[in-house]
Image (cartoon, rainbow, N blue to C red; front, side):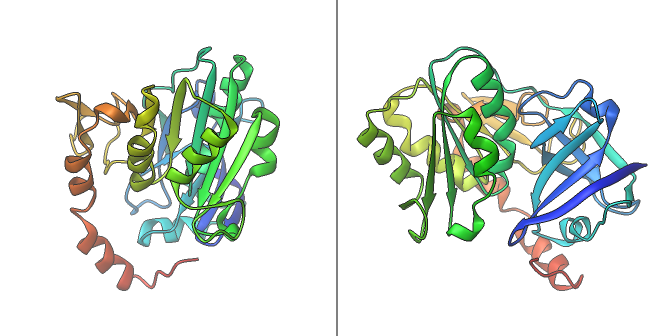
Length: 276
């Protein structure tokens, strides 16, 4: 059993969960993920890792309440235990000296981009962090990210904080600043990383996106997370989750992401779940 050390609602519908899992943390690297269950009968949920402490043996994940399982996860309290924390899973994000790296985070991706920003900074890169949200009250962790990036840019769709717009607006902001990236990294919902791929294509540089595909076992056995990259079938859990977005078959991926929407809606409406 794995002990819950901390549980916090960061912003509406986004929760932070800190868990003691020393064996997982021992080899964890930026960009990798875990799979956990909130209780014995719960489904397996893949979650990105936002931070960890090897000395304390703890890891931090940030997740959105989207259905019955994540709603139950959000109800956990410090001192509670959960039966399953599996990881680290997936390939780590490539960290090297690239030059100027733009790191874009939206939703839970504002958290999962943190270890990547930190590692890139330690390698001597000029890191530009961009946080994107619908409104100012959905932004978080600016103070945690700021020490590791030369610029922190906020984009809100309603214009309540920072620049008004979506990912495309961040391209305009960078161009106004005279910043040309050598690499782009994006973490967040499928639509965000898809739009990042479209809008940043003009720079003709690698656009590394973390794909949050439907996933079951996380070891490449079930095949549910398969994606087409550069015309070849890949498994997001073992070949990813990072891929160059320029090579991803987005039409196929977006269709696959929608295939269980009816079942998810049924579970939400019949489990007493509500966005928290």
